Picture 1 (cartoon, rainbow, N blue to C red):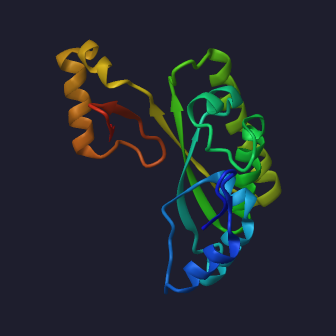
Picture 2 (cartoon, rainbow, N blue to C red; picture 1 turned 120 degrees about the vertical axis):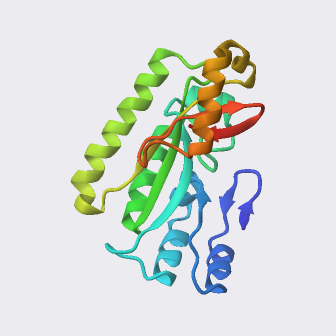
Length: 195
């Protein structure tokens, strides 16, 4: 479904044909860059699923950070076919595109990334506030997105957490999360768990 494999530009026709072959399709994971680069796919899937104000398509999207520098270092293909410098613009405008076609993105935003500075965190927070305000202004009741906060915790840090901290992480993973709007995550032994 990728037309340009080097720059990850979606092949809209092939993607839409795939969704036309199934009775109902609710994609679970996707990229905001792909949605912005090929909005016709969102429009086509929305039409096939008869979406509207009372029926939305939910999709999990990794936003990670608003910092172009961090996204370039840690996820250099995430923003393609756009550049790392355009990443905040891609997040903002991709969210508008999702809202236009009744898609509800749940953005996984990671705090404490390697090389992250205080300024990177502020940049991410400012983008979230900007998206919220501008989206409401433009789309009113159709303005929806969710931010899911994930804490980056390398598995080696588990030793530093001590017995009590490790117990909290393990117990929390069995519970499946405390809130529907904000969840914290951690990496433990190389796998993600929800606490």
